[in-house]
Image 1: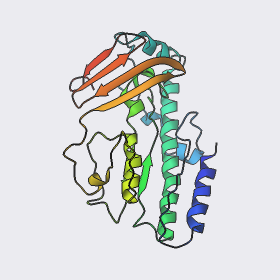
Image 2: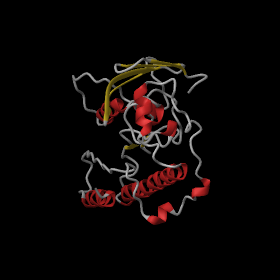
Image 3: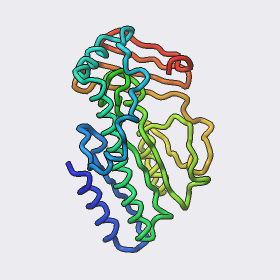
Image 4: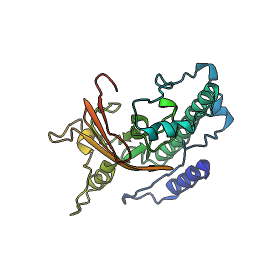
Length: 252
């Protein structure tokens, strides 16, 4: 799967589209920074292995966690600490590579005069444990690195006070309602998410959610898992083992 080719195809579409006010929507679906972390050398050269440190909880053997968590870690214990650090270096280089590619997409919008009135979302479908608790990739367990994904929105004509960081419980389920609202399209369909347009206007809806819910049946290793998280607490239901409850104020 060639991320370079995906972006080149997207650039060709942007630059060949007729210059008229008709609404349009484009999805640029790169695979990275998915494993394996193969990346052009010039981006790898941006990062020195000596600067890469392991996560603070890397040595957590998860003795107080469900057994499946420990079994998942066992798959990665064949790697030495230097190999873990090298993998982090390659992942970060991959992120820089994608940032560079995405910059070309933004530049194309600039060249075609569509920068101001184009709503752009930069996001991911999931995160990566990236050595947290000695884990990599995604799936069970239910730790934040796999669930906390980027959500960067740009719309120069509509965003109030650009450059802000919004500290709110936002979900991937919010994007579809956001796009429909931005396009002025009404629907009778009920969504699990809600439009993010108020946040773009520097407003916080009074009834915005105060908890997030997740569900997973696993990836490679399977098990029924559900979670609910507020700002202070996180509860994880594990159908395959005992449950988990965390006070996030003292144990994030």
